[in-house]
Image: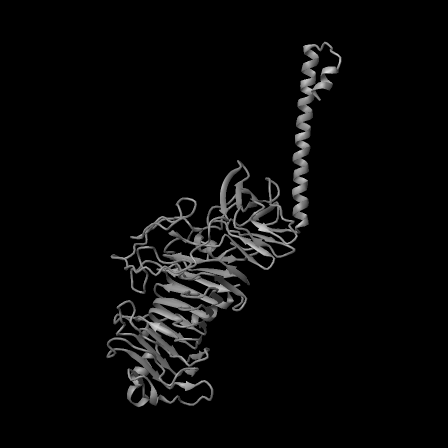
Length: 543
């Protein structure tokens, strides 16, 4: 090419002509650049169309709740990558609002067996609105050490020590992306980009989502008005919030005005954690089809490196449950399913506080499916677990409930200050290949529970050994493992109590009429609190 130029005839070009040529070339360059950008956008759109992506919120959606998840539905099953980022930008200034880095592991997979002590002073619940927007995830509370940032972290419900979480969860051909909580706001325009390495498809058709117009949405102008007595949660975005946690974050600490959170049918796969809340009623639209769940356990979200958690008042809060009401009072769950999908020490529900109720609720967990620390009344509910499935210090009154467990049904840890677990007209069904026990009381890190109490009145039992009760370590003088009128689930006949554990007792109506009457009365068990049982049936009028 240089030689050809040398052979061209020489000619004089005026400065004016030269300027015109430069302007022409500049316009040509801009035109080519615009054409390239436009072609690239078309290519991205074509690649996206080829992948048959369905976006939620859909592109250019308006009135989106800020607590929304981002959902991609593919025509084939995607594989989650181990690198790449999902980014959310403020469309008004192109400022990065949130970033999910897939190269960061989600959380621990092996339990830390290091022995640590408990907090030397009661855990302090500091007032304040702490979120990912104003606090670094992993900021320690109490006397805990900072949470390591080598795993994914997000602050949930004001717990600054933060939770490990899955930034993307895939079920079949649907990928749900979980932005860090509380970073999106009302009256904002956002756009989303996804690196090509985040997902791979068998057809290799996903090339990422790029640019400021491929996936955009705007949020609602304002939050629900203050003083609302009812909030609606619907994963499809048609309610006040998309997530249960979003609704809870809206409610102020120590709320005194009763408020109902009505949860529409759907699977709400999220860690739910709230603290210092009160007077909240959760109502599911359908007991079997309104499901709040997460793959959480003690391994994935363990106690701090230097502090353990236990059932005592003032303990450091646990992060291992799918749903946790921490230091909360007058909370009611009704007509829904709460569950963890992980094995190990993993509660479907962890209740800490006073005057809390469950009505027509399914709770599914593994070990420690339900933990109750504080007065609770549970009626017409079903609890399923793998062993020690009812944990905590109580007091808890179970009325007409159903229990299914492979191992021992409970490990009760009440002190002499309050009653333990009382069961009235309940059903216990062992589900393992071997017979199991109603409860056990082994030594726990050098500690025994000499006032442990489990009282069964008019209960039906199946899959339970003749001994009925498991090992009891330590002093048994004040152990209350009592039964009255326990019958076989198989034939309705009274159980043969001749081989029952020597520390247990069979109550007799003639001799123990007062005891039976007392333990059949919720206020006696629950420290004088009389649960508003009649009000529970009115909850179903909420729609």
